Length: 136
Image 1 (cartoon, one colour):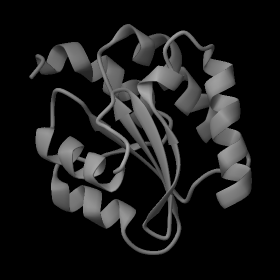
Image 2 (image 1 turned 45 degrees about the vertical axis):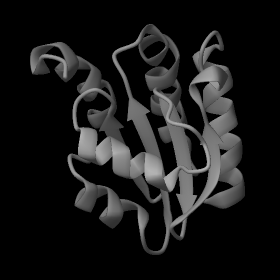
Image 3 (image 1 turned 180 degrees about the vertical axis):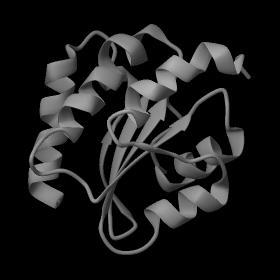
Image 4 (image 1 turned 90 degrees about the horizontal axis):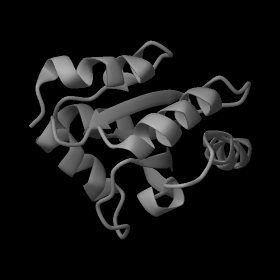
């Protein structure tokens, strides 16, 4: 666990643009199950989250066509919520940061850490936007 004062600005990078924080397994279940589309961002304190993942998620969320719900869990903070989100992301291994798009409760698109590290935020955003165009 990280000190809250350290992660609060990182949380706000997503919540300030409309992402809802999920703090426990029940929150995750409610967000993912059911009809519609949801983007889940596994947030992290690492440099690639700061330089690539969060800026990409913000850019993609601003696109005209985007998921019905934008949610986030924070690796290293709310373990129960992160573990439950990762259960839905199977068979992909645990990864943070990561981004997963669900449609009607089913995983339809996944971006893992190795697809985030070293890539420009706009390239990652374009990947997400392509998935939004297809599934949302």
